[in-house]
Image 1 (cartoon, one colour):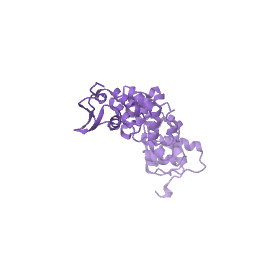
Image 2 (spheres, helix red, strand yellow):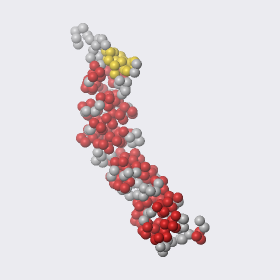
Image 3 (cartoon, rainbow, N blue to C red):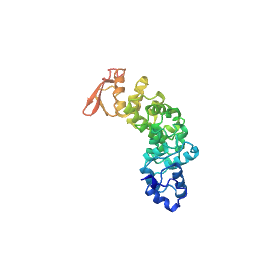
Image 4 (spheres, rainbow, N blue to C red):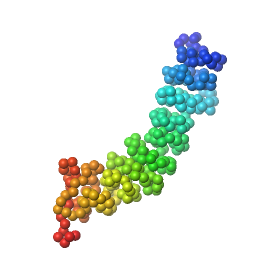
Length: 305
């Protein structure tokens, strides 16, 4: 629009004309104009559309910091503006945006703000976000989460969700796995089964105390098998005991017999079968046959031992 047609300062413009001016982009998007418009009309549809089309603010260096923060927080909380526009606008106003509960339903907003360096990467931001949806998005992007995640008073449901999220850093998951035995609330079946699923995918060994808790819990057999297979090196001397506790066909492999035992291929039992084969147990050999792991056992000794 030609410069001579712009209304440089809308402070004296009647409130009823402001939407028309916003629809036709008749005033420049300066800090003062946007602030005055919102004070008179609120952040209405015409202004939202204008900001979305031209997300560039002229902000004088001397603009009051508190006023900058207030406008940035207002723009960021406006879900009628697309995330990219909100992040762009906020970045022209402040170095960091105050975290708030209003971000709770927009994980993509939290992600974008973190990627732009506009959220303070700290435990206090994590707590301020308040909702699990936003907090999880924050943890995914956070570089400091390993420093405070264990002491964050997270619920068991949230911990299980972090363990299942492939984008959460391995360091965070390792710290959670180590802390589970010291936090009674985290010893739920949901958390332990999420831990087993993570161990199955990554082969990350669990701490001995966590593995013991897993084997004694009501978690599914498949979760226990996955955790044990990943953690054989952690507790080699306890593997026969833990296999016996699995019950069913798993326990049968420890009993000498002239017959074989078929185990599921998933989770992969190979790591603990290798240890059992090389130890003084009934397992003599094993191999994959027709979609199962077939385990052959030593014959019973004549004296019954």
